[in-house]
Picture 1 (spheres, one colour):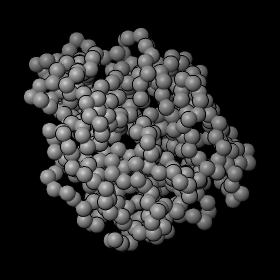
Picture 2 (cartoon, rainbow, N blue to C red):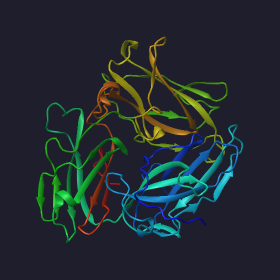
Picture 3 (cartoon, rainbow, N blue to C red):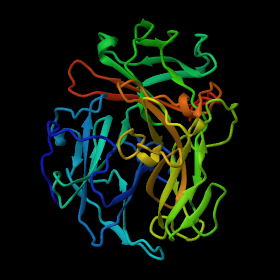
Picture 4 (cartoon, rainbow, N blue to C red):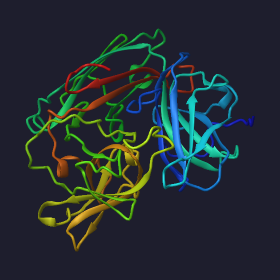
Length: 414
């Protein structure tokens, strides 16, 4: 088994990024739950599943390692031996060729952490998968979290008091009690990240607390922890390429799937329907095993803007787990002048996908907005993830001492 010292000071790599052009359909989730965030408890029996495909012709020798990061996803200045028990690298030994599917690929999977390669500290972790035991041959990265629950968290979603955002935004009222005896300065030692539907592009990071007393921290300012409510996600049911769902217009050339065009919903009245908050899951209505018997297809997404005119000064992106919730060239849509629509083609594996459209100003780096295209409503059902980090005076890393998931519609933790 290969082994090397992997230092935290190594070159920075981007989280949730696929570097290999042949790697597709990367999924990392709690065991048996494709729609979950990969959050495990320190020193527990919790497991996360890793799945991905390689569309290359030959079986590859894939390895993985973990990188402990701080609350801002920068590598910690620690040796890998300080946060991994056992081997520093592990080879992925479970794989098999696709069967039945017209697309040839090799499916790889693993259950993590393995008994001889375990994280020993809580915090943010970057899973790095690479070729031939060489970390320079990076294939992709994925975030996961190891929590040592030492903070009690109480939270609920309410309407903002601000009349400008009362009908369009959601606000989180948050109270944290951190049982730490060595806390000297909460403003410096405690960090907070709040995610909406697992998105980092609009995350609220390190807001100023409104109240501090002993080990209790409250965030309840009028403009604190306020998010656009957005709208329920669009869906694409791709579980069958033979029996077309209501969202598929046609399948051409055997593998190009054209979805129904999506109209802008900014002026539409809010309508609730159950969605998966931007996530996707691999599944098939035609075969038994979805991981190596499912097909790939090039999916065509189409957005119809008002009056078939492009949005002035805005770039338009697909948003959702299908593009790793990242706004970049892989998710940016192109305007087709002849048709008067935005289009994007993405190679996807059979499954069920949620997605939305996001606009971003081309001239600055402000937070993206969902309201321009899909509208924004305070009633929208969203999932919020609250992550609490703590750094003691003697540590060189941020402990993840609290992880809390909240549903905006029910105000129930899950």
